[in-house]
Each structure stands twice: as C-alpha cells, then as structure tokens.
Amino acid sequence: MNGQTTMGLAAAAAAAVRPCRRRLLSSATAAAAATSATANPLFPRLPRPHHHTHGRRFPFLASAASQSQASQTGPAAPPTPVPVPSDPRAAVAGNLPFFDRVLFPDSFPLETPPAEEDVAAPQADEAVAPAVPAREETETEREAWRLLRRAVVSYCGEPVGTVAAEDPECTETLNYDQVFIRDFVPSALAFLMRGETEIVRNFLLHTLQLQSWEKTVDCYSPGQGLMPASFKIRTVPLDENNEGFEEVLDPDFGESAIGRVAPVDSGLWWIILLRAYCKITGDYALQERVDVQTGIKLILSLCLSDGFDMFPTLLVTDGSCMIDRRMGIHGHPLEIQALFYSALRCSREMLVMNDGSKNLIRAINSRLSALSFHIREYYWVDMKKINEIYRYKTEEYSHDATNKFNIYPEQIPSWLVDWIPEKGGYLIGNLQPAHMDFRFFSLGNLWAIASSLTTPKQAEGILSLIEEKWDDLVANMPLKICYPAMEDDEWRIITGSDPKNTPWSYHNGGSWPTLLWQFTLACIKMGRPELARRAIAVAEERLSDDKWPEYYDTRSGRFTGKQSRSYQTWTIAGFLTSKMLLENPELASILTCDEDLELLEGCACCLSKKRTRCSRRAAKSHAVE
Image 1 (cartoon, rainbow, N blue to C red):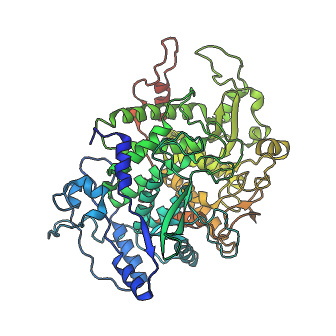
Image 2 (cartoon, helix red, strand yellow):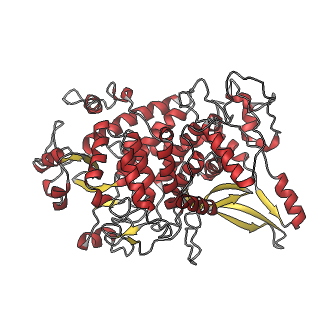
Image 3 (cartoon, rainbow, N blue to C red):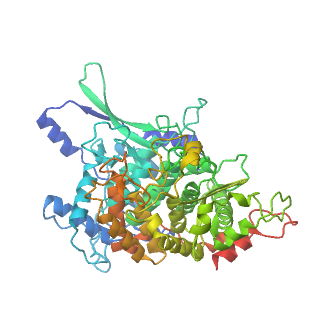
C-alpha cells in the first residue's frame, strides 16, 4: 500500500462512491424499498485500538442512544451485545482483504462474528448507566431538540447534516438551505453526546467525497485538499422523460459565496470533528480508512505547503472563516491560527505511522512548536505588554530587536488604554509587519484555550478578562464575535461601507449565541464552569422567545439582529451542546488538547548563533509559568 501514490489512493477511494438513484415508485413499492434500504454500518463501534493513544470511549452514550430511541419508538428489545475484537480489522469478518471491504463496501456482505459470552467485563457497546443521573429536560431544551431534528437533511435515505436555518416565515432562502461544515459542528456534537452517531459518520464520509482530489489548471477551481464551505442536496432527472431521479451533492467551494473566498476553516473543522467522533464512539477504524487518511494528508499538505511567508501562521484573505465578509482580518487572523493548531494536534493523533507519513508527522511537530511560540510570544497582550509596546523603539535592524515587527506605538487605540484590566489579557486579532489588530475576537481566544495554544496562565487571563469585561462581551446575550465595533471612517474604509456589518451588528461587534458552546468548552477546561452557567442562563431567558436568531445587535446585545434569520441551526445546537457539556464535563476531552511539553524541547527554528534568544526555551518558560 505504501507504494501507491496519493492520487492513486484518492482514485481508489472515489471508486467506492456509488450513485444514489431513486426511481418513481408506487406507494407500496416505495414502502418496501424504504424497508430494504436500511443497511448495517460498515464498521460497528469499536474499542480503542491497542497501538493508539487516542483516548477512551464514553460507554454511557449507548444508554443515551437507547433512551432516545425508546422515546421515539416505544420500549426497545434488549440490546444485542457487540463483540470486542482484539484487532480492529477483525470487525469485518471473512478472509477477503481488509481494504477491499473498506473501499468497496457494496460488493461484500457484512458478517458480524458471533458474540462470545463473557460476564467478566461489559462489551464496548453494552448499555451502561450514565455517569451523571439523567434530569428532566426543560421546555426550552425540548423545543431546541425538535427544531434541530427538523433541520436534518437526508441523502439516499440517510441523514447527512443540518441546514443552516429552517425559518418557515422566510421566503428567500439564499444559501441558508445548505449544510455548512463549520455550522454543522455544534449540531454534530449535540448528536454525538446524545448517542446518535450515524448522522456524524455520514457527514464526515460524504464531505470527504466532495473534497477536491485533483489539482486543476483553471484558477477558479478549488485547490487539491480544499474542503467545501457547504453542500446542497439536489434532485435531478435521469432522463428527459422524468421517469427516474438521482440525488446529487452539490458543493460550494466559495465560487458562490459573497466575495468568492475559499473557506480555509472548513478542512480544519472537519479534522477536529473527525477526532471528536472517533474518541466518543471508539470507531477508530474510520480514521484508519485509506480514503480518510488520504483526506487528512491532502488538507495538511495544502496548509503546510511552502510559500513566501516568514511566519508559521497561515496567511489568508478576508472572509475565509466564520467572519466571511470584509472585516479587515486578512493576513494572519487569530481564529484561523487557533483552528490550524488544533487541527495539527488532532491530525498527529489520527495519522497512521508508516513510511509515507513520517515526514508529514515531522513537519507537523515542527510547525506546532513554531506556531505555539509565535502566538504566545507575539499575539499576547496584557497591561504589562501594552506598556512595553507604548515604549517601543522603531526602525530596529538586528537579530536582537525588541520590536521585531516594527510596531509604531501610535497604533495603540485609545479605547484599549482604559479597557484593558489590571489582571488578565488576551490574544490580539492579527499580527503583520507594522500592524497589530488589537480587537478582541472571541472564537480565536476561546479555541486557543481549548487547544492549548495558549499557556495555562494566558488561558486563565483570557477568562479573567471576559469575567471583568462581562458587560462588554456578554451583557444581554453571549457572546460578542469581536470587540469593539468599527465605526465612522474606520467602518467605511475597512468594510467598504458594508450595510450588513454596520457598527455593533453582525460581524462588526454583534453578539452570536452559537459561540456559547466554545465558551463553555473553555470554561470547563480551565475549571471555571460557573462562568459558563452564568452565560447559559442569560441566553436561555431570551433565545426561545426571540425564535433562536442568528445574532443580536447593539453594544449590549439587546436587539435581535436587523437581518438575522430566525431558527438558526447553530444557535440551537450551540445552546444544546453547552447544556450537555456542563452535564457531562468529561466529554470536553473529545475536543480539547492538553499542553504538550515535548513540543518545547530542542530547537526547531535553527536560530543563528548570533541570536541570543532561543524560541523553544522561551516557549517552555511560558508553559511552566
């Protein structure tokens, strides 16, 4: 297998894709076809493989899944124990080659080995009582689950995702009827924590099939490894007579988006979600599939490709992430860097070690080390750091320069001088030569905590700042996407007078309830769940009455956004995910990463002997503070 090329593996994986065609059927025939269409998944849930250090499976989810099924279909039959094979490849019975079964599942019947009676230890998928006693859901939670299930879309009879919004009062759908990769993440987490894993597995595999496998000459075609921003399920006729129809997945790689910007964050979110799925289900066989391994490598190859940049951060254009309109974040925005770091950490866990992956893993380790130092050293600001910048000398030319990016002290905005608290700090939004974006961006800071891109001390400082500046960042609705808003000439010049990003609206200082789940995750990781409970309580008072809007306007988040869609799916899913994480805080480990001191050993940046400061030593000193 190691001798195959990347494109050869991609072609083999693509060959496994079967067209999904639905003929016009009578009602009786359709019912019979629907019954026979139910198929067993290719891989049952599996225990953790002995040769990996991915984490553990959470067995109480089997109980949650069975309870959910019972609530929908009535009392269920006693569960059939699933055998626990010593080798994950033994999950597929028979003597046929393993990868033949992976790549061509429709060609072989799936045979499950008979279960062995063993009363000494519970099976991997055997129902186990939840770690936390179940409580009765509130009416708001029940409504949220009804709305989330209403947003589910199916492809070939199987659930594959949730649409961005399902607003029955809105006649103009735009692209809100599509399944966005970044938007689906909180929905996926809610389903995973409830034990409903099929939709997440289907989503991961189908979006992988949409990945741009081949590099093209046409500059408007997506680059190799790029994941789509979204996809839509279309039904097209097979012939002119309309006697049969075929369902197709229609991806959007940015060619239909406002500004025509490629989604840099989609592939990063896909890797993060893949790791979460495997950790919570124990289905590590999925991540070891040839097509999945190839997909991970293509995404990383795209991110780690050589260029002209001198920094370890990813260089992107405006609008390439959650903030998908012109907002002055082009360059090296914090959100992309935090997701990039997290995706590198997740990929390092999931990549199968062999001769073909050694160089890639070595490159990942090198990039992780350089990126963590760069962000911790140059993006972090607190009162002490801002005072240091205030006294910077400029035009320094030497290896030992203090002001390495030639930042002019006059760039320090007047609002920051009075806003920064005595204790705490945050990571700035962007850093480029002679430019620091001092705005506070919530997602980048929260995900830097979750992925351990920050030091523990910096992570505590970020949460301390949010608590200190609660009226600015949370107020009537969590959480400000960025703070402060751009106004007057700054708004006109940087946004181009964008009528949707007016001051304190949408991306320009609007309040986004979906950020609640990332905030909850960061609080749990740092042992501050009381902050998350406080924010959830604020949101729960309004979300249902306001019809689950996408965002809120005004400085304090009092008004529903002027162009906000109602029944926004990731608002609903973010609320549910936050509540479930607080109930089962151990589940936070499927998304978070711990500090890795091994990354801080040795010197990867090959500093010249003339330089007196080693980045690795400096980074390690930060980590142990």
